[in-house]
Image (cartoon, rainbow, N blue to C red; front, side):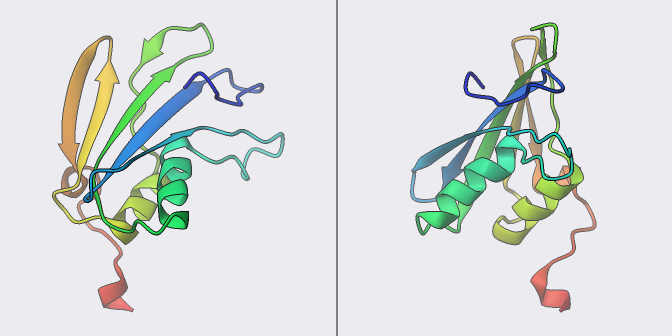
Length: 120
């Protein structure tokens, strides 16, 4: 989260994805003045892992601060959920921090009707 590039929103997000082999890849959000090219921390972490040859994941942890510097819960956006769906199973764990409390969800809980390669 400390390396977030968020000059427009001030919303800093950090993510760390755990591969099934036990490697951890970190990511942070990278904003863009045009907004739509902005990359979320979750997708940065997953892209870093995939670019290093890892394609199976066990869990991801996400933490965030708003523009006032307050820690807030940041649930993965729809695009991040779909990227997770590409590489992760229904039991993939998502850990979100809210005011010092860790909340745990599965991919199936946050994306119940996944669009997966099997339907193509």
